[in-house]
Every structure is written in C-alpha cells, then in structure tokens.
Length: 257
Ligand SMILES: Nc1ncnc2c1ncn2[C@@H]1O[C@H](COP(=O)(O)OP(=O)(O)OP(=O)(O)O)[C@@H](O)[C@H]1O
Ligand SMILES: [Mg+2]
Image 1 (tube, protein in one colour):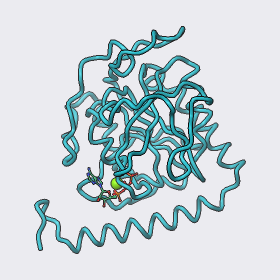
Image 2 (cartoon, helix red, strand yellow; image 1 turned 90 degrees about the horizontal axis):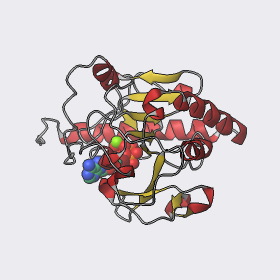
Image 3 (cartoon, protein in one colour; image 1 turned 45 degrees about the horizontal axis):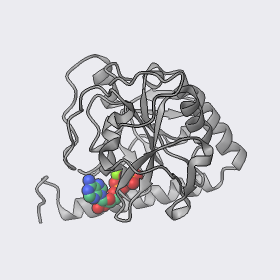
C-alpha cells in the first residue's frame, strides 16, 4: 500500500520501530545519570540559552518544566520569568495535544498527569504557542537536519506545527544526544537548533537557512500550521495583567540561530 506521501506502510512501521529502539536506548542512558548530573546539565543549558539574543529578545517564550531524567529546566524557567519574559508552559490535554498557560513563579505549578508539573493558571488554548517568540522543546535526541525524537506521544509535533517558520525552535538535550541520524516521519516537525551542556547552541539545518536571511523553509507538511500573527502587543497576544517591571517588549525574531 502506498500512502499519499509516497512512503509505504512498511516504511512507516519501520520508522516507528526504529524510533522505539532508539528511544529505549536513550532513556536507558538517561536513567544512569545522577540527580547531580541532571542539575549540572540544566545549569549549563540555562546559561547557554540566557546569553542568546534570540532568547533575550523573546518577550514570550514557550518552555517546559522538566520531569524524570530530562536536563533540569526548573532554574531556566525561573530565570526567564524573573528576567521579565512571559513564560508559557504546556498543559497536557487528555488526547495528547498541548494547551498552554503562564508560569507565575514556582508556587504557581500544580501536579499534572504522568508526574508532570503544570501551571495552575487558566489555559490559553492550543494556539497560544503560535505567539511565542521562541520555543524550547524537550527531546531525547536530535540530528543535524533538525530531526527530533520525543517521548512518542506526538504532542510536540502537533504543537510545533502551529508555530510560524521564523520562530526559533530549540531542543534541549545532553551532549551525546546530538546524533548522526534520527528517524523521521512526515508528521515530525524539525527543530532549528539544539542546546546541550558542553556544546552550547548547535545550529541545525533549518536554523542555518534562516540565519543567512534566505526565504524561510516550507512550513511543516502536516498539522495545519497557522501563519505567524502580527507582533504581540500584549504577552502572547492575550489580555492579561500589566507587564511586570523589566518586561521585554514582545517581538517576532527574524535573525535566527
Ligand atoms: N500532527 C499530528 N496529528 C495527529 N497525530 C500526530 C501528529 N503528529 C504526531 N502524531 C501522532 O503521534 C505519534 C507519535 O509520534 P512521534 O513518534 O513522532 O512522537 P515524538 O515526536 O517522539 O513525540 P513528541 O512530539 O510528543 O515529543 C505518531 O505515531 C502519530 O500518530
Ligand atoms: Mg515526532
């Protein structure tokens, strides 16, 4: 049987299997890391991100609160918020799609499904991520083409398909998770950069095109991406409380990593 993409059912099943094997190997490696290593990795990633202009200029930034053996993002999320960015965190919907709500400090989080910590603020809708000036993406691995392996729910593929082509999508990984080849299917949305503790920021295929100022790449093939809206006048385009002191005005990044 041939699918619309030209790929066969066997291809799709093969990619799924390949992903599952890679995921298992990477999760096993992560399980061997100590809490200290995760914290240290989180600190290095935080510092690398905070010095990037794309992150510094992001009035609204979509981030995530780490769980399990992921590089620790708690300090990063706090630092972004403290510095004045409007920080959106995901809220996992029952079907696996991601809603988004604002982070208002460590005390604003509540327990979510699957051991997640989620913002207790009102959810802004699945399209709120489209107003972010930068998106930080969890990943188990990425390759130089920007192909990304996630936890296997497809949640981020759905969310990233809603983000415009000029927005930095940055995957957070450990250094040995930047690998030669990540299997990718048609629904997979590539990221444009990776950040890891020792290597810092690594520009991936999509990011290079944009950094040269070329025409942006075609939007993701599936998932009904929406075009970027006008520059936000309020954080995330959503009426809310007045900006806190030090709020950086929201603008859509053009120069990308
Ligand atoms: N845009 C989409 N719409 C509906 N289902 C999707 C979409 N993208 C992915 N999925 C579903 O999610 C499943 C898992 O996808 P995949 O293996 O790429 O997850 P992942 O990228 O590792 O996870 P995540 O995106 O949550 O980090 C796919 O088999 C597919 O059924
Ligand atoms: Mg995927």
